[in-house]
Amino acid sequence: MESEESLFVLGGSMTIEIAPGVVMPVALAFGLLIGSFLNVVIHRLPLGVSIAFPPSHCPACETKIKPWDNIPVLSYLWLRGLCRSCGSSISLRYPAVELVTGLLFVAIAWRFGPTWWTAIHCIFVAALIAAAMIDYDHQIIPDSISLGGLVMALLLVPAANAWYGAPYLEALLHGAVGATVGAGVLWLVAFMHARISVALGRQFDHWPGEGESLPHPTEADYWLWFPGLGLGDVKLLGMIGAVVGAVGVLDTILASSVIGLAFGAVQALARGALGEPFGFAPAIALGAIASLFLPELWLLSLYEF
Image 1 (cartoon, helix red, strand yellow):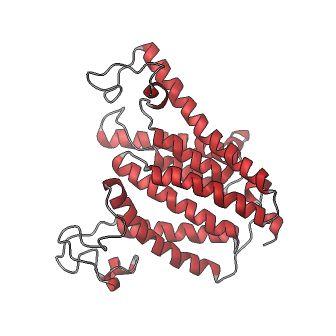
Image 2 (cartoon, helix red, strand yellow):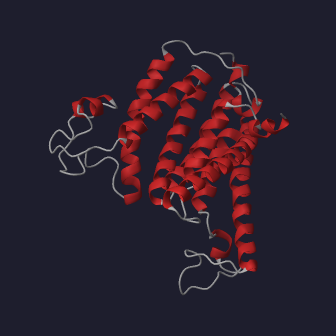
Image 3 (cartoon, one colour):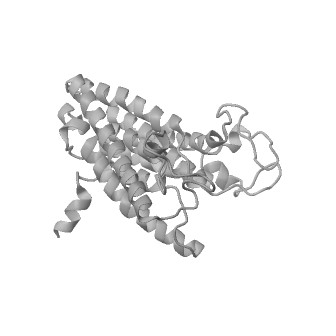
């Protein structure tokens, strides 16, 4: 792939080029392994448990999982979804996360070829998967993923652009602007929603909480605590903007809004109630992943037809 085709963040367009045959099998293997690791992160990180110790074990009988029983996807199929020691059922979500991660790594390798962008975007997608699943389970997004990913993006993306010939400071500024736009737009939406809700006298079960008064402008909660939207979403979009740039993160926000509405509707039908809170990170992650493969402002272009 030529260097000018690799300037994804600054160039705004890239031709799609099929990666050499060896890249995608390697990407699949790495993706499956990373997916297995993500299962550990998704389960342990919100609980404040070390992701390194103790080694992987059955949550029912706590027996240490042997290496040959921990092969991504294949071990699940071989064991028919049951623990070898106690026979308890293993959640289908474990191989699903592994397989989805592997397939996304393959898609990224196909999209970006044997370049640094493949490695960077694989890391990016892995962080999105972890954030999405944790938010789905616990309605939180750990700072180690969002803010840690933001710092990593501001280091790696400008470095990759500089490697392919772009001015480093211009690339760094581009990432910083993307992060500011991503976090700033969602923060502004959440802030205005909070102020309008107060003006209209709307009530929320979780905000400000039973027996607590509404925050005042002199308090940090006035600026950082909002009904219906967590600050974790704001920080996650900051990370995304640092990777895909200002236009890419706007694409992400538009797409995630549509996806989030669909998620909310499905959840309302499933639970038989409107207004139940749910994690927004899965919608954000899907929108961000779509921005890697689709043209800029692709969602808006649909309205031209």
